[in-house]
Image 1 (cartoon, one colour):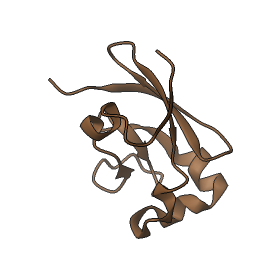
Image 2: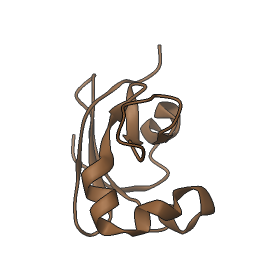
Image 3: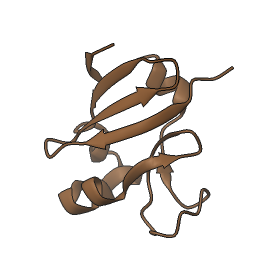
Image 4: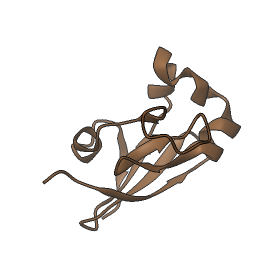
Length: 91
């Protein structure tokens, strides 16, 4: 079983609170991640905030705005659960 993300809340400092199905809550610092080429569109704070969502059971950004699971920017849920970008583990 892989960890499922059930809710995400982006913040204006390029962090995201991620809530997992098993009750784990983690705040991730995405500032370094948005420097990578594939995530560059997220440097625009409005895009980062407005398109942040849950898709494919993980943290994602619906860049196209059409809820197409194949056209979003997402992060593997196993990677998220292992905490490589964690700023704070809350629960």
